[in-house]
Image (cartoon, rainbow, N blue to C red; front, side, top):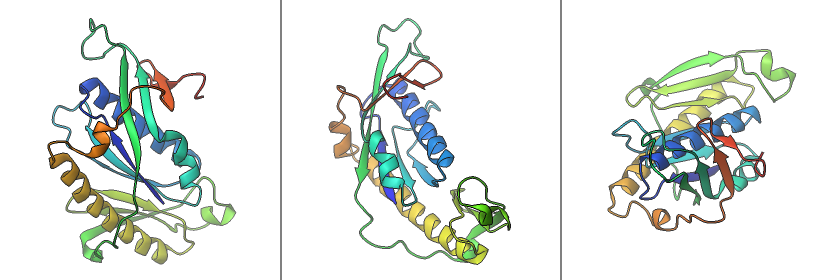
Length: 211
């Protein structure tokens, strides 16, 4: 498991749009590789995107998958909010967060709604034979996770409970980060040169060097 903090620093709304696009793209790429992701977003008062988000990537290959994302990310595009604005380069930062210092508190089963489904994608033939995969939704907050690593639905339910508890802890952590005047030290470390990834246009397509 690896935890990534996405931050737009003190950038304008266009940077928050880039952040939302980057988080969604990372999740889609991880899913295509058979990796599960959980995400907690910071406040999004104007609907353009959160100033920060924490994404958790699960699986043995999580670290290798996440490594190319860590650093400065550049979005080259005309502002969708200010068509006549001369600036076309928008930056966000992605930083690895340290492991949680202690285990999150256990959740009660009645706090969560479970949905069983047949898992697909990588994982071998056995994964598709039974509805062992579980989607769990925390009723009070709407936070949701998917657990499908185990062959037993019972074990996947237990894993999903652990993940939701961890997400709730992350949500509190992200709220604490956002509440500070400086938001987080990572905001100040956001570098706008030598991006590790570059995306272009409204479609947020990777440049040739990142494709």
